Length: 164
Image 1 (cartoon, rainbow, N blue to C red):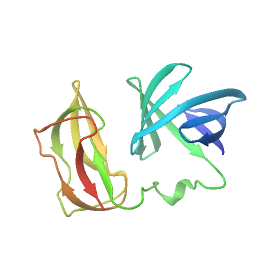
Image 2 (image 1 turned 135 degrees about the horizontal axis):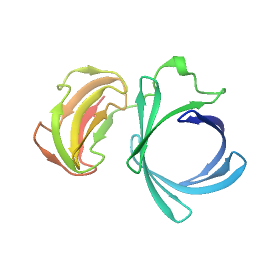
Image 3 (image 1 turned 90 degrees about the vertical axis):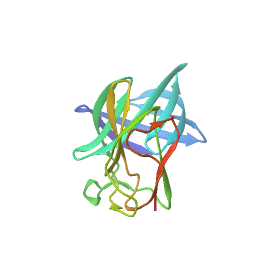
Image 4 (image 1 turned 90 degrees about the horizontal axis):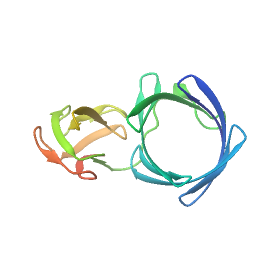
């Protein structure tokens, strides 16, 4: 797969091949190999060059937001064969569990059970290590069930809601 990726205004040409969790290819002509595991929608654990990196990718009004190592980057992807920016956000298919990406405390519910939501819409705000993180919907649909309440502590990977 060939992509043009822009991270914080810097364009990169990326060619990737995936076999299971192993991704290899070229980034600006430099050969790379990584082991990539999807933790849940938008969150990945990447092992590259013996170094482990946790990455979270979220939709934002201006494109994509990549969070890694306590830093945040604006990103965009261009794939002339597939990706059309004007087509809207990429949405997961089928019934989706929304899981806590980290341990913390639910400080705010942004939706109610039965509410119709759009992909990328905020569902919860979780506070972890004195930072508040908005947990967003992986798809457009209806909030089928909520498993968390404001003030409730949550563990990483715990199901917070179901969107169908």
